[in-house]
Amino acid sequence: MSVQRLDLETATRIAITAVRSADSLGIRPLAAAVLDAAGHPLALLRDENASFLRPQIATGKARGCLGMGMGGRELARRAQAMPVFFSAINSLTKGEVIPVAGGVLIRNSAGELLGAIGISGDTSDNDERCALRAIAEVGLIADTGDPQLGS
Image 1 (cartoon, helix red, strand yellow):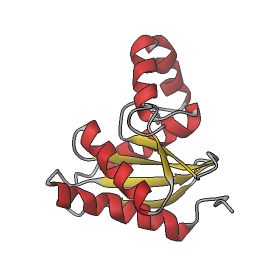
Image 2 (cartoon, one colour; image 1 turned 60 degrees about the vertical axis):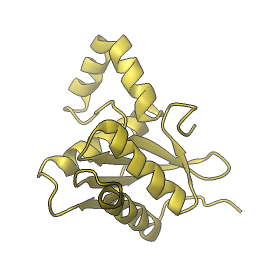
Image 3 (cartoon, helix red, strand yellow; image 1 turned 90 degrees about the horizontal axis):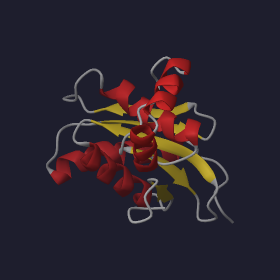
């Protein structure tokens, strides 16, 4: 039986693993935001050395993925191809959509959407690496919007 929703314990484990991954990978301190499928926050953690805007940026990455239904890499490609559309999206959301890598959809083994994670603190690629590690650690599936990196 597949997991039907993302619960507080799992979301917290994902966020903790993501933030701790930065240290083990030797990258800058991070913040991690884990949202359920409806876009509600379940876990928001910031390494004590991460800058104060990191939680908001991480949340924007996760919200963008959920709101558009695709991983951050695909969002980034579309934002580059359709800047006027994404400007309108950011106007509608008061700037809460950040279309870059580091925002990752979280799915169960049946492909059902459970939520999303956003990571901020280092390069978008390194942020995404931490998200992928954390999602894999709890046995769920990452959807980055890029078939080569996870869905």
